[in-house]
Amino acid sequence: MRITGGEWRSRRLKGPGRGLALRPTPDALRERAFSVLGDRVRDAVVLDLFAGTGAIGFEALSRGAARAVFVDRHHAAVRLVEANRAALCGGPVDRARVLRRTALQAIEELDRAGERFQLLWADPPFEVWTDGLEAVAAAFRTGVLEPHGTACLECPERADVAAALPAGLEIERDLGGGASRVVLLRLNVER
Image (cartoon, one colour):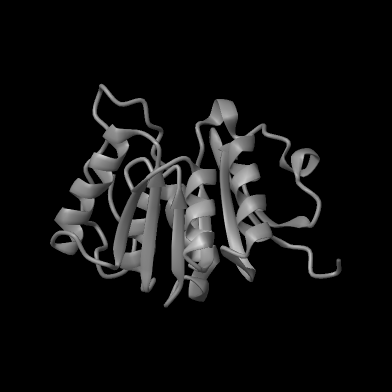
């Protein structure tokens, strides 16, 4: 697993190994999604939910994001993100913060702290992919994800995102391919 673009392009990330049941975003899908996101990444504050290895947040930082907050509820995943942060960023820095929380706990905490994000990526375990959709809706509802922000939901190829979409959200773009896909979501501005 490697960073696909930007300052850290081709740098390897520490993967989950055999003992940790994570499904990192394939490099090709990550590269395609970030290509579509384009300039939205530069100077953005990024929220990486269900972070796993942290590949998404580190990809964003490599491509010019101002900072990233990584959230995962599993201790082993948090340690993995911290190891990747140390390898890429040189240790603990404000630019890459890691929280051990559920996605919804983190959103509540970030809201109380007044933190705001322009880009959110949710990559929940595929058997509960709608948890990611719920987190996206909560982030928009609380204002943690700014009204003109972009949310990316990684989900199984066969997931019926349109049928499960909470009121007020719309699909901006659907990047299918392989066993997983990334769906870009935004607030419906016509509401």
